[in-house]
Length: 139
Image (tube, rainbow, N blue to C red):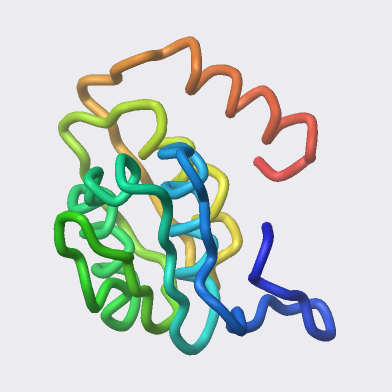
């Protein structure tokens, strides 16, 4: 991911805001990855992307560690503080972009995470993510 740099095998704080352009999917996945980093990171994008506040996605990440999302306002960048540790989360509904972020990033947290989704939206996209994760040997 652009901006989050690896240092001795660990992600570290980006030096500037991470600009995801017009990609909401990138915003959601990058938000989860930024939650794995000690320190603060800022995610931004174009006007349309900044109007898509990731409130629902930020709640599980915030519950799994220190306050991961310090700033969530419509039409502004997202600031991520602290590193998540993992934990259990019950989600009654999840779209594929939110769930993909959780599926890719949660296994990299220090603690185990269990995700239960009772109303899966866009199942084929989630199946693609799970297939990719299996190919990486991460599940």
